[in-house]
Amino acid sequence: MVEPYALDKQAKQAFLSNKLIELTKNHYVRCVEYQKILNTLQIDVDKLTSHYDIPFLPVRMFKEYDLLSIEKEAIFKKLTSSGTTGQQVSKIYLDKESAANQSKTLTKIVSSYIGTRRLPMIILDTSTILKDRANFSARGAGILGFSIFARDKIFALDEDMNLDIDGLKSFLEKYRGEDILLFGFTFMIWNHFCQLLKEDDYGIDLSKGIMIHGGGWKKLAEKAVSAEAFKKELQEVCKINRVHDYYGMVEQTGTVYMECDQGHLHASIFSDVITRRAKDFSVADIGEKGLIEVVSVLPTSYPGHALLTEDEGIILGEDDCPCGRLGKYFKITGRIQNAEIRGCSDSYASKFK
Image 1 (tube, rainbow, N blue to C red):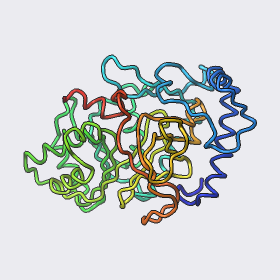
Image 2 (image 1 turned 30 degrees about the vertical axis):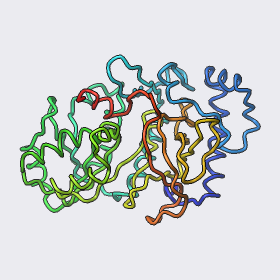
Image 3 (image 1 turned 120 degrees about the vertical axis):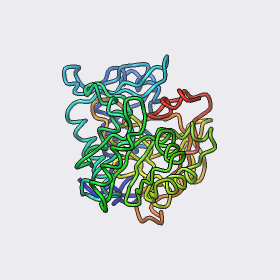
Image 4 (image 1 turned 90 degrees about the vertical axis):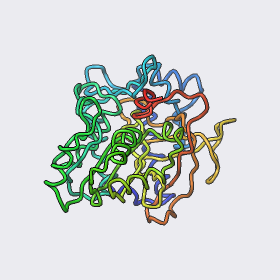
């Protein structure tokens, strides 16, 4: 497997277009519903020349339909998006090969940020989320996926979402002087970890910590908490300096867009981000806000390789981020108006209005 940020614009365009057109043809043959969609749109899959021309599916379709390109007997794992009571959830079906490729790709991407050594890991969540290994919510899938980077781990929250401060201190003492990986969902970190440490001075030193977090910005934005304020608060309450946000979704699990030290989200060679104008879905320019489309070479068991999200964002540049990684880098500016609250911790955060 090649390095995740090694291809320039031209090489990546050729690589992705070849892989994604092949995937489109495969899903067209193997998924009846997908074939009907493309036929309705009068798409000739043999005439596609670029991944920009592949019809995207709105992510909402995975809430309405069971879309899969494998036999039901081959289903190895079912993933669901998080949703508040009464909301429909996306349903994603994986065979063993798809699940393995997701794990390998996640490993490749994240290792380029934190190194290849497994680290002691603090999961800023409760272990009860992992009860059903065959049917994972997005939250559980995220925890399990990132747990591959741990050589030892502890869940920092009990089943009532209270911080296990004694267990946390014992774990930090055990690995004193070593790098510690922390993982969690943004709103939950703010609400159940950061704010509690601020209220009670427990003297926790995470200056050797590396935090990876995702989701939940909708609720923090309502609280007027910016990404800069989030990082500053963490530094003040536990001295952590290395904090990486990531953008991802259950509909393309394994394809994550990690934040570099410049504060930019990056597309690896396994994926791409396209911004589209809402009025006609034409491709927006660099620096122009648009609807976020994500493409990924990973969804082989279901037609989720080209998806229109419910997020808006701006592509900031390509191949010229000061961090040195090649590929597009971008930022998310918010949800499209009237979109349902979704995502790992946004749905959880809705309980705390």
